[in-house]
Image (cartoon, rainbow, N blue to C red; front, side, top):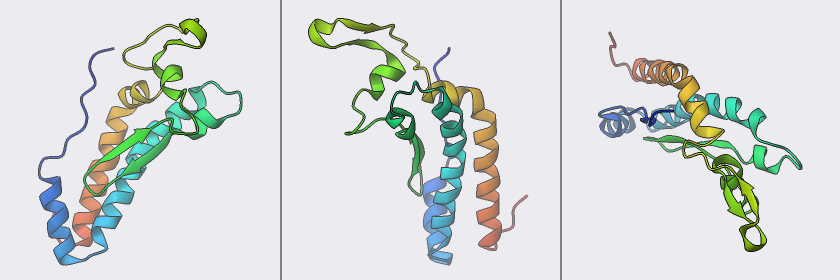
Amino acid sequence: MATIEPIKVTGLAEFNRNLRKLDADLPKVLRLAQNEGAQIVVDWAQPRVPRRSGKAARSVKAKSTRTESRVEGGGKRVPYYPWLDFGGRVGPKRSVRRPFQREGRYIYPGFHNNRDQVHDVLVDALIQVAREAGVEVD
């Protein structure tokens, strides 16, 4: 799998600042729309994460700010998630081995396989927020 480039929106921070000047609630709508795009990756990755208790799969979540969306897995309660996703050696004397995959098994492939769909959701959301702000969009 080739290196996965993030989807970058040039001028998003400035757009966000201007939205806030028009209406304080519009940037919140934009953040929720970014979560919607990230949720596509979550929906692809979660069923593929191995399950014993289900904690690792439930730890895969969409998170966003007004200018960035991301998908995260693991955390304090699931410190082994990176091992599940990327592999490596753990345990006593590093005796438990899982083949290392630089590109991961769940989140990055989820983004790679759904990149066009995520892009379309983000573009639609930007257009919708702009129209709600009263900005004419072509």
